[in-house]
Image (tube, rainbow, N blue to C red; front, side, top):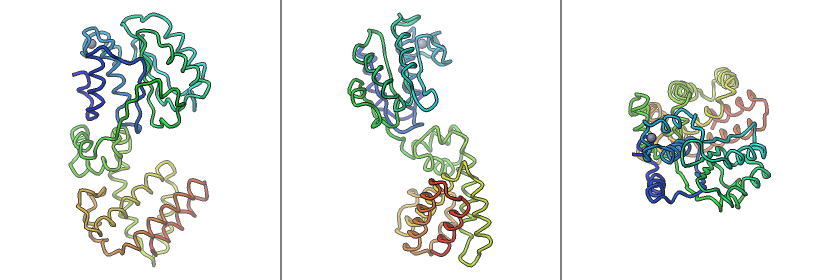
Length: 322
Ligand SMILES: [Zn+2]
């Protein structure tokens, strides 16, 4: 019941539920795994269960409601101030944690993006982790545990989270966004198991726009220099989403490779472009690999801030002649 609203992550739910049931909650946890898959939601539900007046995260009592509205006085959240979580922030937190809980039996702190702790901030936090006050719970959240001090990791109970399987995410997206099965599957594949990405503002880009861009790309041919250059110009204007667009093109050629090698259709990303994929199926494996190499090379140059339009022109020329 405590974690009912969260889909998937059953093993993690069981571990936390067990800790609550046996009153063996650790003083610090490290939730590690990719961004946008529900780690923070899980931390908040866990905190809610600890602070709930009925003890099971009922969702109705005043403590639960305060947690849901992010205004419970015994929950502290620490996020990066700019690019880092600084020592001053950790010191302020330590002061807060040294006081008695205002309402519940617990004082809980969520440190989101824990990899952003500066070394001095991490060392300061280490003291709190080494000598925990009773009734204190610290939950660190990170997608990059390798960037944390090993001494921090070793003082937390580590709980790894994985991306949701594609089909599971697709089923949720169908319900939440009222999408068709094909659309939901495409979106799930492109979001790489990330709810945040799938439910975010990228939906139009991932569905309608991807459709249109891949169609434009596949309509280009080696002889059509002017359309190729104007498509490069169009893409160069997409500064914010260019990385996503190159991902789309990559999934398209990858799908063609899979089809070529008789892989089942449910392995494909662009299920809404099946007709186009089958029409393009004449490309040889060597040609598809060259196209993928052209994409990779463009990505490399774009990251180094070369002239975007030029890099994209070269990429498209290489793709159309591959
Ligand atoms: Zn409650």
